[in-house]
Image (cartoon, rainbow, N blue to C red; front, top):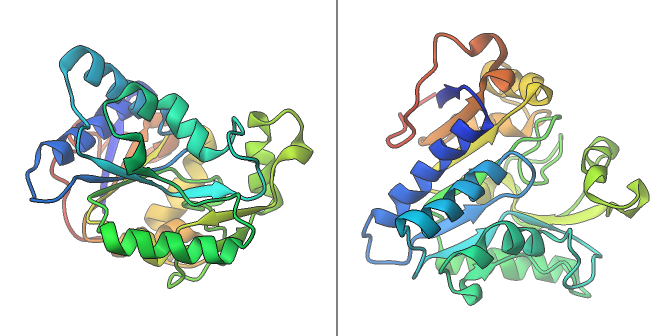
Length: 259
C-alpha cells in the first residue's frame, strides 16, 4: 500500500485526476474502465477532471464507468441517487457516452436480482482499470459496513445509523436517508487492477489510521486494501494526522506494490 500525503483536498483531487488521465492514456486494446465513488472526498478530483476535459482536451470518449453503489428505494432521477450525483458532478460535463456509465439499479422490484445482474455486468466488462474509493468514518468502503465479509460481492446491504447520520446532510431530513443500498462487495472491489482511495479532513483521520496501521479485520472494511498489489491512499494532511511529514509526496502515477 502506497501512501501519498498532500497539503489540501484540491491537491488530492489533482493527484487522483493524474491517475485517471494515466488510465485514459494507456492503450490496452479494450475500453478504459473506471470505477467511480460518490461522497465528498472524490469531488475535487471530479472537478479537476471536468476542468482538464474543458481546458486541456482530456477525452473520455470510448471509456466506460461503473458506480460503486446506490441507494435502494429512491425514485429514478432523485437528486441524491448516486447515478444522478455522478451525472451532475462529472459525466454530464465530459465526452463519455451516457450509455457507458453503469450503476446498480436501486429502483428494481427485486434488489437481489439487480445486484446479481450488476455483478455479471462487471464480470463481463471488467476488470476495472482504476477504482476510485472514499472511506467512511467507520472504515467502510463502498457501502461495506463493519462486519462485511471480505469475500462478499455485489449485494444488498443495510446502512449503520452512523453512516445514515453522516449522509443526512445531503437530504432534506435525516429520516429521508435510505436504510438499504446496493454495493459492490470487497471481493468485487479488490478485482480492480488499481485502486486509489482518497480521504480528506480530520473526520477521516481515525479510519485512515486504522486502515494503515491496525489489524486487517472486517471491523474496518478498508483494511482489506492492504492485500491489494496496487493500492494508493491519497490523503490531505488533516486526514493523515501524524503521518503527514515523512511520507509526503506529490506523485500517484506509478504506485508501489506490496503492503
